[in-house]
Length: 409
Image (cartoon, rainbow, N blue to C red; front, side, top):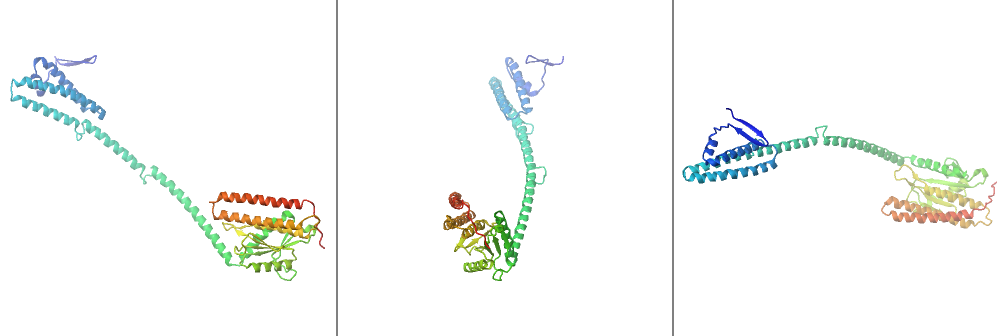
């Protein structure tokens, strides 16, 4: 009859089982008759656990649990060995040491085979292999992501984006350098040629015209027209409201070159006389000519300094705008019928407005020099604003009643 195995309700039944393995037969036959059944069960349990070790893929945690179970089985097995040895001492003192040595050696070999890292089929070997495989996969992925030669890698995409941005910035920088070089060359060319003064006079004429148009004043360029003295001195003449035939004129001289203050005043006197003007304004660009933005000379002359803008593309005409307004008021007041109007006081207030304008220039110097004293600059501007409003209110009160201006024949 053939042996068969039946499993039911977590129980294993083996019928008609015959074992011919020498080690197993030798071990069981060496036991007492009453211990042989337990020995067979122990052999099955130990073999099953050893086979479970060989097929385990759950890693180190299952290995520890299995070792614990194997240790218990080994302890039981060793207990049986010890008992067998005690029982066999009486039979043969020569056979016992050999038997024990054989069993222990076999156990050592089985454990080494199960736990040997060099054995790829052992639990430790498989666990080690899995770790090495994961490490290689992760390393390959990192290598792929950091490969600049791979156009799909994040690092290569980042490099491409940076190169595009760098190319764009390089082009912008090249354009800015070209523009700056062109401006520098043009400025150098103008500074060496006679066009420098001509360019400034063109800008000045445009500004004077724009400032005079709302007041109905007329600006005439006279630099090429002989005047009363038969010379060409006096670049511009501003006719104050010529529609009313007031006959009031302001002569304007443009000085875009280095001149001494004495020379500038002398030239302005000639311009006023040559053009029949009651007031004269000399516009200078040399920062060493005068120390302030507006400098009055006598009661009928103003020296006004205009500065080039920081980018070199134009001129700051704020001081000239204030000077024109002050000169216009002074000239009109000088030709007006006084009555109850305090002309001297009005002129003093106009002079005060010029001084406030000089303080505006001081603010601009501070802003240009640096932005580290912004609080002080803000306070300075507030004071300036209050002072200018006060002066303008006084002027408004002084001229609130109509002033009769005589006609000039």
